[in-house]
Amino acid sequence: MESAAASEPLLRLRKVSKIYEAGAQAVVGLTDVDLDIFPGDFLAVMGPSGSGKSTLMNILGCLDVPTSGAYEIKGGPVSSLSPEALASLRNREIGFIFQVFHLLPRYTAQRNVELPLLYAGVGREERSARALEALRAVGIEDRKDHLSNQLSGGQKQKVAIARALVNRPALLLADEPTGNLDSKSGGELLAILARLNAEGATIVLVTHDLSIARSAKKIVYIIDGRLVTSEKFREMRG
Ligand code: ADP
Ligand code: MG
Image (cartoon, rainbow, N blue to C red; front, side, top):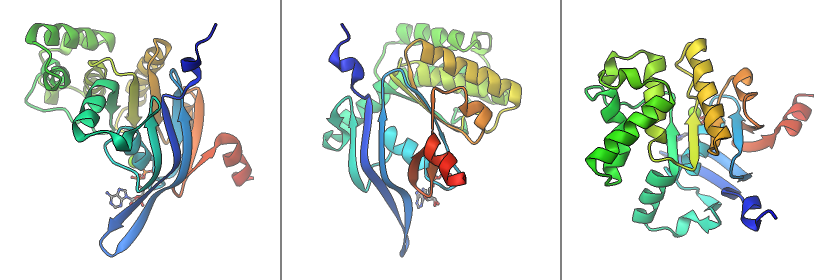
């Protein structure tokens, strides 16, 4: 028998809006977004530049809060969490991969990957073992002792993925992760994401590239801050 929990969304947004107050002007980030993301989903988010994709990712990853609406993770409202609980949730449950890699240039690949474990209070030996395991999982273990600024873009992104994975998060958020990569490195990255998804990770991937989005199980579009499904998007384009 399937358990009831299996059909419960991991992430649930209801009428989520985000307004940025930029000086005297209010800028719309998102408007009334309803979205359920289930465990094991692989969702691609597409849409023009400035449409609200990163705003959505920042909210999903608890890096920013909605102006209005409800956001729940595993059925619990995020707005009711203390700052400490939120930081701990972010560190344990969510891995981020960005277009720019945010690696510390004077640290080795391995040390970059160990950082989230250091923040989580994991001891030195376990840090080292788990960082190596994560580097191995993305096929870049042989570069573990290189300083991150000695790596190519594709290699940096692999290290960034290893860092996102090292806490074994349930949710991986990738915001245009192939944006700075050549097509071969982009393809390798996608293969890694697909494998992680097959192993159980829930993935949300922002991309401009339809051929990349097609690797996902579902695609949604964000247009002027509003979320539309693929069917609706095709209708809008006639
Ligand atoms: P995308 O990722 O789809 O390119 P964003 O989510 O970054 O779009 O931006 C959506 C809208 O919100 C844009 O008009 C952008 O200028 C605005 N915006 C994003 N972040 C901020 C911010 N911190 N302050 C003010 N406006 C912002
Ligand atoms: Mg963006």
